[in-house]
Length: 577
Ligand SMILES: Nc1ncnc2c1ncn2[C@@H]1O[C@H](COP(=O)(O)OP(=O)(O)OP(=O)(O)O)[C@@H](O)[C@H]1O
Ligand SMILES: Cc1ncc(CO)c(N)n1
Ligand SMILES: [Mg+2]
Image (cartoon, rainbow, N blue to C red; front, side, top):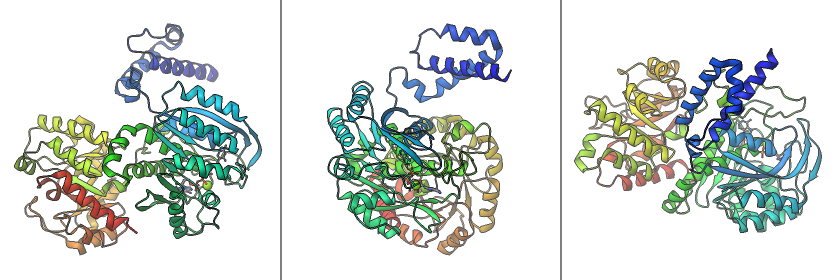
């Protein structure tokens, strides 16, 4: 019986997947559907309707109707234990909603204990695989992993010259965490000469960074900063030195350098043995994000010149995914060795563990929080969507639509057009107060005040995936927000403001008190602008993630210029070293 059920489920899945890739208007696959209908008529019919609805909603499915699917090609080795290498890359790309093709450079016999054997694929055959994929399949981004011989690196270099792609992510795999050598020493030189100058980003771990530089062991965050800068001199546009193996560090710290600014990317270090393949998965995830946002990347690249803010955002998204996956899989037991694989497919498990949130809120999105105001837009002759577009193009990292005097119908319309702008820039979009409007336009969440709909009720209506923020003035409010399941709190008014009447100001001291008490990330709000943003961020509280502004952006003639100015003030105070 169990076998029959498994068979039916597989056939139903195969049929749904097959139908999903058929061009629009093409008849459904009769053979498979017939079998399923006969055996479990009702269930199959329902599954079919669900698949159709999903297809309608899924932008990837629409891509099949003639628009290109984002595509990563991984050039890497096979790990028989499937924790790292090609297998990790496939899983990470699938989990991030990107198609992944594979060129296999070597086959390893590997498990959770270590690497028992390596069989290198002849370089001519690596060349053949590269040509097969690159000549036919519209690859957006190439991601490299294990490149075991200098001949293979040369072949790849030539193929990328013959078939240029939009992005190259180089994970310079050399030694596995178990200590086994995965690339010949002669590879280092060709890497430096041919691959690094072509790379958009190179992502060495501590050992790989020192091998590429020919320098002593990296032991501190300071060493990682210096290594990132020295590696950048070798030609890649961006460098990410990964600190997964940094001794005695409570956080998992990676250093990102874009040739101009150094960024310390921190996430909490998950206590788990299941970290095998984190490096491969992180690089694949960066490649996947690049593939999905590549047109945007090109657009933004012009604006930010060499300050590659977008690639940093993609990298942060990837790091966030690894942290969430490790946390989710921390107690998995696969294999008897020291280091096990983790589970890439949080999304598929969501139904089984309904409280789990795949798209958990990223607190760094609070960095520059733009709150709209219709009166100001009217005053300056800006439409809501033009104002929002200028704000996100200027560097706003989250947007809240705050419309006080507007008909519901117009509110929903405005929300829909702003949502589209925000989505195309990867910026979360929230609605002020109105949970119904957030639901109607499928916004990313809401921001509520102390006298609006209670957070718990909003959470019930919106479900676990949406972002909920709540305004708080006191530590008691902050505690309640956490208990009720909010994602962040807005604290203020910090300074007097004319956007809210009779609003008690809490001052920098009040802000500090709330930040110290809050278990949730905090964004400061109220009378903040270019002149005082620095003083706010300099209260130096780890929970304070950014500033929310209204007038400083929207009560101005040029929203774009003002947002850029505030963005650079915040960058200076937060990241510049
Ligand atoms: N225990 C952990 N908790 C959270 N993040 C982690 C942990 N271990 C590693 N990471 C993160 O995972 C990513 C990969 O880092 P790491 O230094 O382990 O790469 P790697 O050695 O190339 O990985 P591997 O060889 O296992 O594929 C980095 O972003 C790192 O900060
Ligand atoms: C095949 C392969 N690629 C990469 C790594 C690095 O984790 C590994 N252990 N195995
Ligand atoms: Mg590691």
